Image (cartoon, rainbow, N blue to C red; front, top):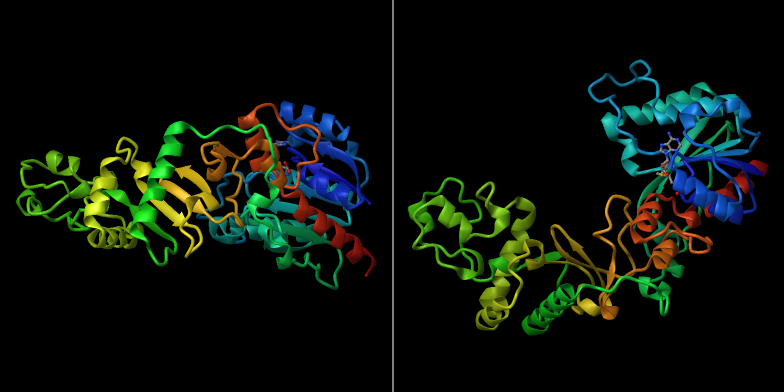
Length: 418
Ligand SMILES: C[S@@+](CC[C@H](N)C(=O)[O-])C[C@H]1O[C@@H](n2cnc3c(N)ncnc32)[C@H](O)[C@@H]1O
């Protein structure tokens, strides 16, 4: 069975299909450094821009793979099923190549919202376009955690076939094989150490968790500025005079304030813009005030030492185990919204946009390495990753999980013969 790899990137499709016994006969990728890397890793030099690829030069193949980039498009507002959108969209080139070659199967991958974007009209457009050239599309949302890899990354996998009868059998998940991120860590790997200030901040938050001795902590944030505060959660219609009877961030009294500028300066940053606490934060704000009222004097001492220069470090977003409040047995991300604590069974999705959210292993005071991140995509056997952490994480964050692909590729082979 031969396949082609459109929008090849780091080659998640390539690795998955080759592991399942297929042969790659063509690839294309826009980025020169990824093309170079693909050649080094797989011995195939990808063509460049798909819009310039003449479909006639592509060899015959059984499966067409395409992890097409999720482009903005302008179907929104138009009536469902309306006329063809403007040309030049990358999916149109996938359709153009499929129409010429008519491979047995088409395998596409993208973010799940490709199904719902523009009121579902893009998905309708895809289904209709492939139907017009003889394919039926089926889809399933799959995350690597479903196949035993500790990364939470929901993606939609779409399989197109010319078969009229029978549905594609999606890979069976093996919950028993569940791994934790700690199971895949390397010894002595080349990873970025955690900055001393972040180490200090985590230790300080851990000392609070030890101090307050909570029974259960379920998807809740500890919002430190609320310790000692009692200002109304919505003060948008209050006067300065009314505000003077309350306490702001860390219990600072508002009684001497004469202007809104002075009031707001003593309130937490997250409520300053609209003079209210956003509804998504309300529960955590109330919870934090309760925690404070039960432990006031100990928390007052603790609050003196928290780093107040960084707003997001003053919020601990607990998404970890409910009854085990040990930061060091978890994974951490320093996010704009707060310090997020996550279960090691579900590492956050590697995302291509930013390296600021690279998961941290707090027990080892370090970020995960590029090789460990490659394991989360089942691409760790690649001889080469892009140079440097930023390029590596970007490419890995863009890639399709090769294990999920391999399972789909294997099921396609069986399907062919039934
Ligand atoms: C979502 S990523 C797919 C990654 C790939 N599936 C993998 O496993 O690494 C989309 C890729 O399409 C490439 N790309 C974007 N526009 C392109 C074009 N016009 N022609 C070819 N490749 C393109 C991007 O550089 C990027 O590597």
